[in-house]
Length: 90
Image 1 (tube, one colour):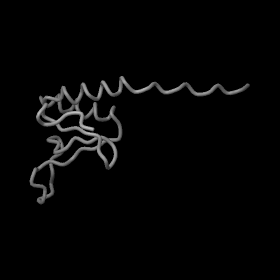
Image 2: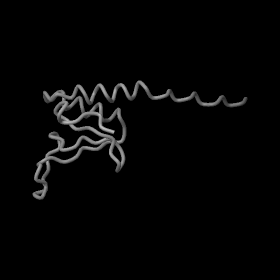
Image 3: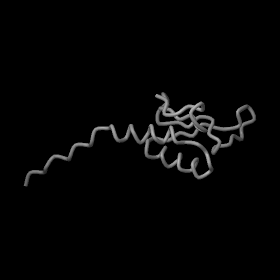
Image 4: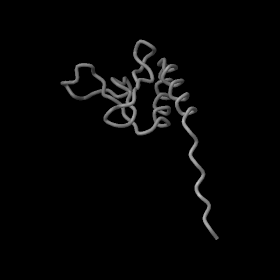
């Protein structure tokens, strides 16, 4: 699932089939590999909350991340609440 594409802002953020959430060709993650022609690496994190922190760094750098941010916040809001733990018998 894509949260935002480059056509919608300055980031391409998606649920990665390899696991986690990725910010592809992330300009905050410069590549040191000469074979990487794009010049940036993929940033990957485990949770949507971690991606929100990463997007805050993009926003602080002046990047347009509104679409990705809003999509992730909407998904978090739509998630079912965690059930309360069962009561322990006394």
